[in-house]
Length: 93
Image (cartoon, rainbow, N blue to C red; front, side, top):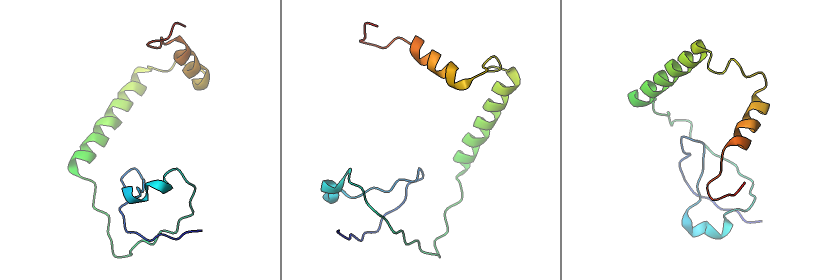
């Protein structure tokens, strides 16, 4: 077992990337212990992000109000049917 210590930033999507000089370890299983400084305060969401979130809320509310997907009884079955019907570029089926 090897131990590696490095400082990095966790992305907004929750990802932690190893630097390129650890490329030999990419794809390997690992156990992690995260040490997070208590005094670090995450920045507040930007105005742009808050606006995008509000726009998304409004769009989803409009879709729900319009009943766009009301005819779908089983979402899993519907999704499989939609995927099966879509033509795939470069495929003859």
